[in-house]
Image 1: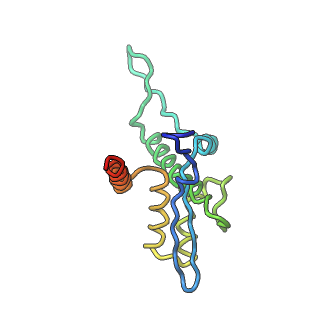
Image 2 (image 1 turned 90 degrees about the vertical axis):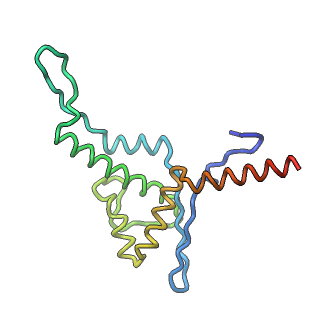
Image 3 (image 1 turned 135 degrees about the vertical axis):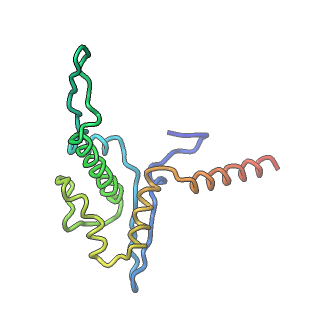
Length: 159
């Protein structure tokens, strides 16, 4: 795909964070999730279905306030967040988890525990997580920076 003659390359969407530790540098790369990633997630953890509520004289309707359903939906959202971090960080070369396994959703939440156990500080873990968030959506700073770059380029073209 091209926009204004420039090819859109998925590699350009990857966020990189370099964490210096002693004499080493640890490079974490975060990529945006794809539609096939989302399909994979939905196969692992289907969205919960609310129970049906019956009221006299009315058609059955979903009970979106059911406590059990709300708990299931919160669990689903937690799994979705963990999956997003797991798949996004899969762009990191050579990253092997000890206790996180793609085929076991109950292990996805171990990402932060493993990073912490490996000796990364809260600030470093936050930087890694922020890269995942940035790779998977636009934040205000990104939009402002891109807009400023675009307007500066347009001003140069007009000069």
